[in-house]
Image (cartoon, rainbow, N blue to C red):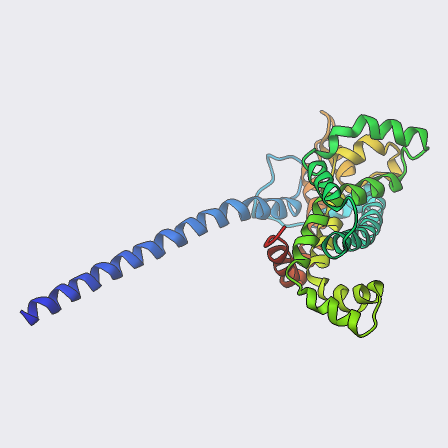
Length: 291
């Protein structure tokens, strides 16, 4: 009887082990498929940027004769450096302004009590449901009247103010996880609300503000609609608009040069994600816990 029981246990253990191995094989197979689907276009773009020639027909993921010709042509024959500088300037200013606006707005709605607080929160919640391009005609007319058309400042204004609703809720949710007793202890020690915010709360907000800074830094690099709508002169164009013109139209087929420009665009964003991933994950997960 004991031998039969042990045999059943051994058989069950063997079956469980087989199921566990099959489950691991299935999970890793799915992960490998997703990794291939995500990484292959990236590898193909990088390989294409080192391919000689300019058409898609000659572009491959692994070029036979790697060359820097597309990068050299991009820097010498186009205004890529100017587009890069324009986008970098807009991104840095937008990042700084957005962090200040979002940090203060999130703190005010999370910690302070004032009349109209619920109405204000509900209003910005509704505002973030509408896509940014919904009011493009109104924005165009408004900037036309204020003389801001074809000005990079117009893009900063839209990016910095357009992010307030979503990021305010994100920061507010993050501050819900910071104990209110810290504020109360500071008040007992004689600190004002501004001193409490500056010396106690602001250092604790660094993960969520890092997340906001990176996402706002990225916005101008990948946006095409607003810059193409508001910026018209060649020397003020951003990277997305400038690169698109390399492949737009029947005569423009500089696809490998476009790939080289795309690789250079992705480089700073990838480095930011690489060095700040700890803060990004921490800030995003903490901000999503409570609203």
